[in-house]
Image 1 (cartoon, rainbow, N blue to C red):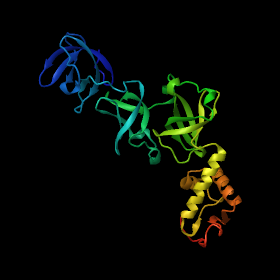
Image 2 (tube, rainbow, N blue to C red; image 1 turned 120 degrees about the vertical axis):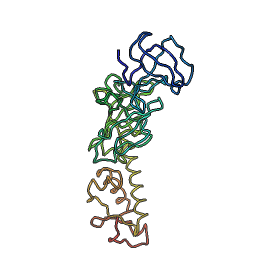
Image 3 (cartoon, one colour; image 1 turned 45 degrees about the vertical axis):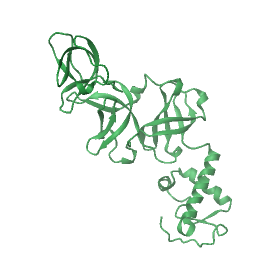
Image 4 (cartoon, rainbow, N blue to C red; image 1 turned 30 degrees about the horizontal axis):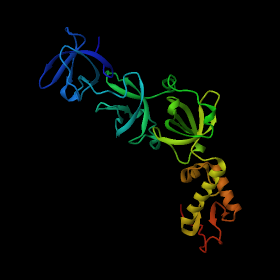
Length: 309
């Protein structure tokens, strides 16, 4: 039998050696041993010639070691872990419940899109694996990893607001796991870019409205309110933005590119045009070329087409 990092093992307490701790092995006879340091025992002290369950890991010197602390994840299993720290050369360090952290390598994320990288405090669904040297390492969970845990969303979820986490990011939207609450582990979902107020990052927790319960049990989500309410909120936000600008004019109109609108307002172009159309219909703003201005009745200031963004 092997002493494998990342696993729970039932080991025999062979002897205590001060000032180090207890040496453990598979049974009382000769064979591989592992040290359970004094610092890894927080409650009852183990007794010699008894069997205890420990978690195995590599210490700071690369030696296999044991702890009585209970880990949040073990080898080959998936768990939701919190981002505790970040190193620009190595990656993200995740809290795993034993006073040590589990590395999720930087190569797990798109190098060219730092805006989607997790931040400290975000929660990631990961699976523990080994590197080539047999040391514990994390990888982001994949669809197959979720399969044994998820359930099909009930149709009653339609238009309800649910909490969830971003699990992966694509160019046109994000994959998510929606919290199942009392019903179970969770439901897989997707938020299209046009249904986001601002870009979401991997590991970010969100609240979103279920806009579709699909036949396969997954859900489509939106962080926006229903269209009419959302249109009113978007219009108010755009109007406030114009009023705060010098000259009470902005270099955005229905001619502006979708990318620029998303960057500035976090809106899809269609949502922006709906909100802008409402303001124009109410006589609050007017478009001149590629600029939108507050109408004179709303302001005594003359617009300035030369203002910058």
